[in-house]
Length: 261
Ligand code: NAP
Image (cartoon, rainbow, N blue to C red; front, side, top):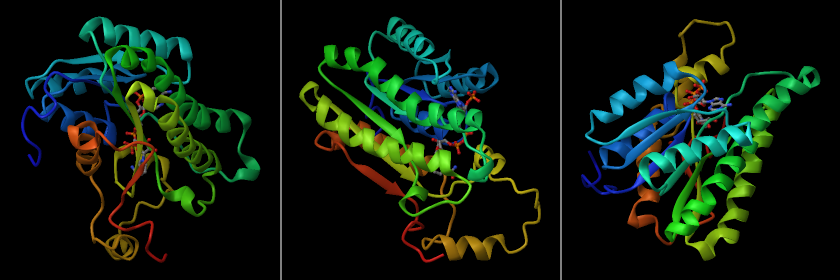
């Protein structure tokens, strides 16, 4: 454990998509530091076992069903969390989905599914926690972005457009909500081989030959990222160390977005 135990004791964090992959890594690091955690997503089979594992850290953990694309569902999630724990100090907008699709063939339904989950979901959740955080005297909103829209990423028009929107939203909300002492930041992970990422990027080629060589070419620091790497950055931003940081996008990617491909 690299942070002080009980660093976040007394705080309540809500992590969307907190039952799997990076979201669970984030929720776990927050719980290890003493925060009570709400893990919210669509599938009970993701969030219920996750909440049980988070309780092993000695904190309260609540699974809440939500579809972040639906403002009513998001409002109900936030009300449920606030009723149960009385406050919300940290919101992590992590829920997302994507899949490879050539832009010429991308259906309106496929475009909407990704843009609404990633970008609209981030806005709806941020807007829903705003009055609670403002009433409490402040809070921390953290979006999980990406780095692949800094250049271009063929067949990912929906996800790159949505994440670029999230970065812009982060800067705008940071200015708008600073007077309420609410900081708004984003973390941009590099490649992290979660099950979700492997599913989204599956090409049908299951051969692992050459994968280590490819990884070393793509990631200067010489290893894949882990959900804990993103969890640690989240704890930093949520902790008192993050008090004077707003509107920032933290790249946590082993140098991969700078490397020549
Ligand atoms: P993941 O495990 O598939 O995470 C996605 C999560 O979002 C799931 O827990 C899913 O839970 C939830 N979700 C999807 N649609 C939702 C909806 N409409 N409403 C509520 N929850 C929804 O994949 P991951 O790799 O950990 O990705 C997590 C985040 O990191 C994403 O924002 C992704 O863009 C970002 N990221 C990942 C990488 C990487 O290499 N892995 C790199 C850069 C950025 P349910 O199915 O239960 O709803």
